[in-house]
Amino acid sequence: MSDSSNEAAKRRRFEAVVGQYTQDLFRYAFWLSRDRAHSEDVVQESLLRAWKAFDRLNDEGSAKQWLLTIVRRENARVFERKRLQTVDIDNVDQGADESLSVKSNTDVDDVREALMRLEDDYREPLVLQVLMGHSTDEIAKIMAIKPGAVLTRLFRARKKLRAVLESDGVPAFVQE
Image (tube, rainbow, N blue to C red):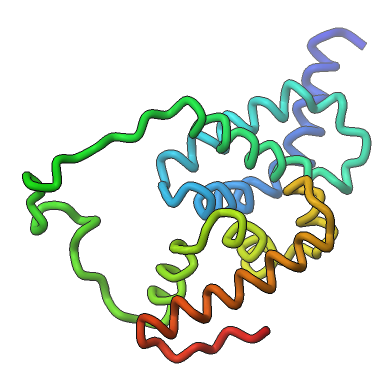
């Protein structure tokens, strides 16, 4: 086979294996960063890294966990380099800044806001389990921690989420 046909075969295989997970990768990146543009950048860079390392993926069945791990590490890399913009709070126009505006008070918004207030160590496994449907073992592989640690974090995350919701006056419906 020529180099161009090898490259084309690799591209087709990559698209077949990785293409089905792009929405999940974006959703995960968004929950990690809380920023759409940042999430798009992280996913794009993660896909580039996955392309470069694709030949080393031995088990296509573990591709999703492999990709989520790449997204997680790329997100961390970006925040290591990133300098967050600061704003002089004395000069903020609350009416012009969308992030300061009052949002609708629906159950989904309340839970989303409470979830975003959790520390990353608790929010991440909860998002992976509840929103993305991963098992404890899969979460452990993605986060590079032991399954027991995942279970502990999930328990604490639910407890913290319930406390946040109750402190905001929202009836807690999070089950243990």
